[in-house]
Image 1 (cartoon, rainbow, N blue to C red):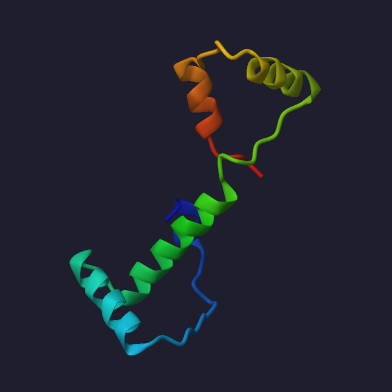
Image 2: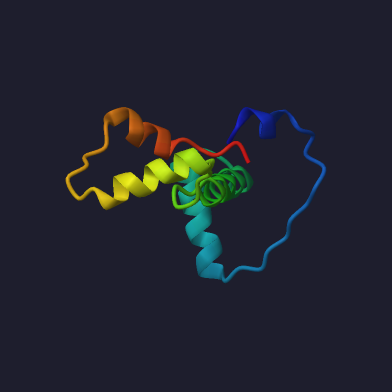
Length: 94
């Protein structure tokens, strides 16, 4: 979980209904991780949400950047540099 989330006061509640088998699975997973069910659920859900929001399938580029991307996609021989791959993996600030 990101540091910003940890420093915020925990004032919101979220309730869920589960089957007994799902609850048992979550309790077992939390026990394996040596944490509470609540912390396991929150940390897992926050990570999943951050992954969705920061999906590498969505990125932003200005006109020049977009034109460069299109040129690279048209070049079948192009192999991206390690730096280019890392930049594409970075999370969007949005």
